[in-house]
Image 1: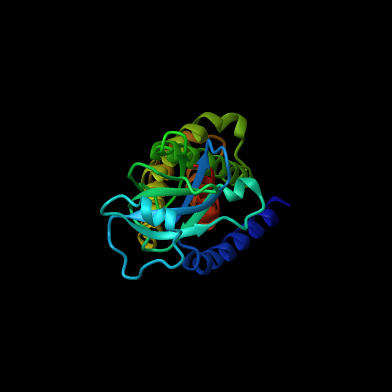
Image 2: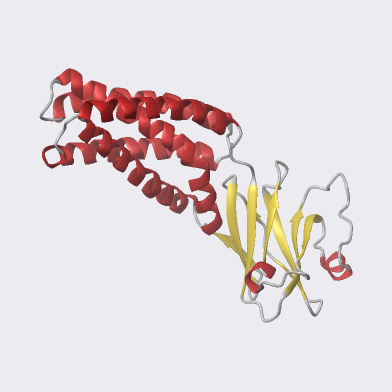
Amino acid sequence: MRKKLFILFCMFTMLLCALTVTAGANSLPRPYMRIEIDHLDQPADWIALLTADEPEELQPDIPEALSAALPEGWHVWECADRRNEEVAHLQNSASFHGSDVPETFRVAVVLADGTVTVTNAITRTRSMQTFTVHADAGMVTTVPTMAGLLLQFLCTCSITLLIEAIVLRLFGFSLRENWKAFLLVNLATQILMTLTFGRELIDGSGYAAYLLAFLVELAIFIIEAAAFAFLLRGQPRRRRIVCTLWANVASFVLGVWMAIPIYSRIAEIM
């Protein structure tokens, strides 16, 4: 029974490898910025992204109040009309997409009574990022990059531990005897993966992130194979190395496949 399960697992993993190559090529991180407005005493009619670089084309339908309130040297990159948005929390938020989303920007909020609030300038540090505008203070803030990396680490590490624990059992290893070595080695390698592949995704490096992920995963396999060859108990050394190989293939495939959905969700809340 265990042998059949092992064969099925190997076939399933190879199928996922093929799917990952196809899906990964079409789902690379795209620049994305979400603006949320706090401390409003009335609805926002317009939410605009301002840039210091003069755009090639002027934005149409810019409200007069916004045009009059533009700081010197700043231009409207894009202006989101929120007047027809019926859901309150959506009316006070806007999303901006595109490879040319400005790195350094200000946010302008035009309220229903014509009042305009223009924030301080802030610089994006991630490819996908959420900013909060504190309308009462005219300030825009965001969550630090390290907090995003920590949340990403918690998500990917928990998935990796689950996948590799299943592989460990399929190869006949006892989790009770090996949990300490299994946990410590995986924590160390997941920290390495987060600070390399995770950081590249945050920087929006596209295909370079996936190339780096492959190289880092290869390094992680060598590290884990060497560690588990001596630390795992209950099976011959050759079986420990083969187990490490399949565990890394499975976690790598599913990890790359799920990287974009996980990071997109993190970006929405951070």
